[in-house]
Length: 111
Image (cartoon, rainbow, N blue to C red):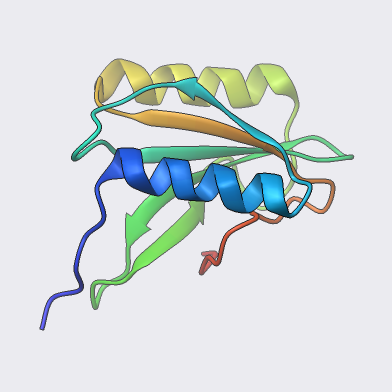
């Protein structure tokens, strides 16, 4: 049985509320398609930034890929990655959180 899918706009609202409740304040950097847009999450930590890209695992559930690699990167590298992705996907959402430990404020399987 397929996992139900949540609309992107609703998911972003919930993630921002979870972040705010946990003291990991977030903001929408780019609005995508409210129904079916993909999502990038920028985590701003003490050592730099990590960009997470929403993906599906082989068996279907949502997971998050460390799109900029396992180590934190500088702001220019993160911005360049986000710019490349938004050029190829105009429906993409981009949200950012303050995350000193570079972990998202929502439940996430990280790849």
